[in-house]
Every structure is written in structure tokens, then in C-alpha cells.
Amino acid sequence: MNVIAFVKRTPSAALLVAQLLGVLLYPFMERTTGGRAVFAIFGLMVLSLAVIVIRTTPFLSWVSVLIAAPAVVLLTLQVFSESDTLFAWSSGFEAVLYFYAALSMTAYMLGDNRVSTDELFAIGTVFTLLAWAFAYVYVVLQAVDPNSFTSSGGELHSWVDMLFLSFTILTGTGMSDILPTTGHAKSVVMVEQAVGLFYVAMVVTRLIGLQAMRKRV
Image 1: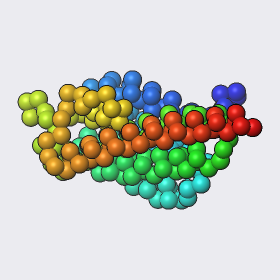
Image 2: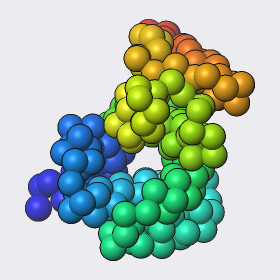
Image 3: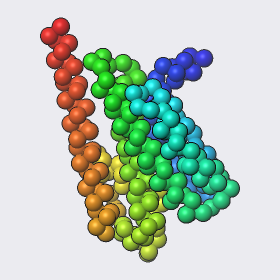
Image 4: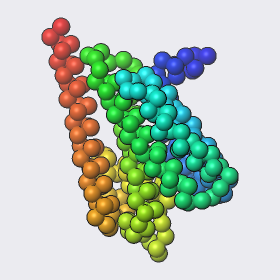
């Protein structure tokens, strides 16, 4: 009961834990046919948590439901199918939803001058949401043009590869072992680099500002 109560008080924490857990579990899911079905089910869970979190923010929750609906249908179909096309389509809708969730949670964090426990978790959750969103964009880019990113032996990159690329770009730690090769892919990478830089600067500035306000009080 204490765990359930904590999740209700801090839904951002539940979403953050789910996404970080996914980072560890995704490599196992990609190796087998059954793993792909579990991957889709796990995606449904994370998607549901994102919609729940958006309900606690100033943004309209019905918009998130509208965006999530086609993604839910496509993910459900993926449970019974191995179609890469379905994954590419669901990735597009999931990218939009996670961008919307990241914006809504940013507004939630900046909505007042009091930092709650949930808002502290939201700082990390927004970061992971952005990483997921851009990773899904990369999946779509690769589906549209298989030559969007460098590959070994002509093979397409997996979801874990794209998520790894997204995290390395967003954190500013490098480009991983994958490089964008087309103009559109390079453009999206540059946007993610800017978003990562601006987000870190915004969070640091906000924390410093709140600390300065406490000292004046």
C-alpha cells in the first residue's frame, strides 16, 4: 500500500523508474520473437504512465489520449505481429506523445516557486522522455530512409541502438558509434543537441533562482 500511495503522490517517479528499467530490459526483449511481444506490452505500460503523468500537469489530458490511441492500437497489433512497419508507425505516434509529455511536465515544474518531491523526479523524467522521443524519431527516419545512419554490413539499427544514440546526443557526451548520414538525420541530431543543452541550462538556472529566493526569505 505504501508503494501505491507513493506512486499516486509522485507519478513522475513511476514513469522515470519504468523508463530506466526499460533501458536494462530492452536488450533482452530484442533477441527473441516472444521478446518483441513483451517489448510491445512494456511499451503500452510506459505509454499509459505517460498519459497518467500528463493529467497532473497544466496541459490538456484529452490531447494525450488522442495521440496515444493510435499508438496503443499499433502496439497491441505488434504483440501478435513481427512487422517492422507497425513499429515505425507506432514510433511516430509515441514520439509525439513523449514530446507532449515532456512539454507538459516542464510547464508543471515551472508553474510555481515551490519544488515538490514529484517535481524533483520530474526533472529526470523530462530528460528521459526527451531521449525516448528523439529515439523514436530516429526509428521513423530510418524507416523512411534506411541510409539515414551509418550501419555495419547494411543492417538496420535496433531500438536499443537508437536509444543509445539519443542519450549520447542529449547528454552531450558524444555521438556513440552511430553517425547521421543524410541531411534530415543531421538536422534532427542538431535539434536534439540544442534541446539537451537548453534543458540542462534551464534546470540549473531554475534551481539557482529558487535557492536565491530562499536565502532572501
